Length: 257
Image (cartoon, rainbow, N blue to C red; front, side):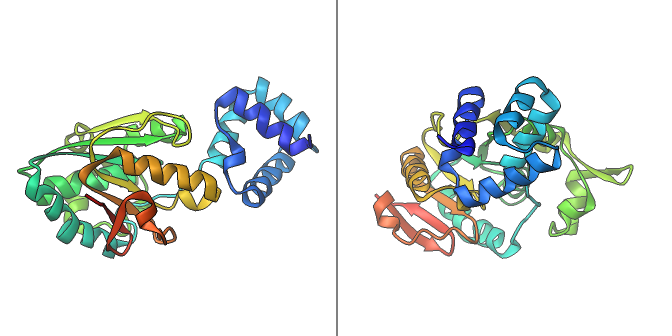
């Protein structure tokens, strides 16, 4: 077994994260860069250091989980969600469950909460926000963001749902109260049931085809009969029938009945 292969096996045993399910070239390049930056010449010595140093381990987990997020990322897709997808879902359901899968530092679930409060106040929405990275979840629960994260957010929403203090934007308690944040590993843990909307964007591009196939199958099983999956702009599903999905709009897939 090679140095890197042994390393990912040890990481899987320690953290329950199987790096073999991520695209190897991308992940190995990212981790080699981080390892070298910290002064380790091989993965064996790097793992020994990770095993003893919590700060080094925290940095490692941050690097392997891709925490890039913004409010209203790709605004036109959010407009489709607001104007087409959510009206379709809520027409038959006065109470819905939304799952923001791989939610990173929370921008996505807070955006969903704003949409529901602003445009569907008559609907009871339970929002589950999950991520594998406990550090990202801590930031999400804190709900404090810089100007860049809010650059695509409409000004009225910014004024209504945030307070500006010390050059940072703080999420209002009214948004936080409707979201359940918890740790979840898409490749290992049980999925929520009867979900009306799953939002999982710009994450699956980092996984192998085998891992993606498994996740799409699990998303399909997780969805309510009227449910919809919303994916990222680089993650079109070219064979949606395979997962009992049908294309509703660009990057939106409905459950086939």
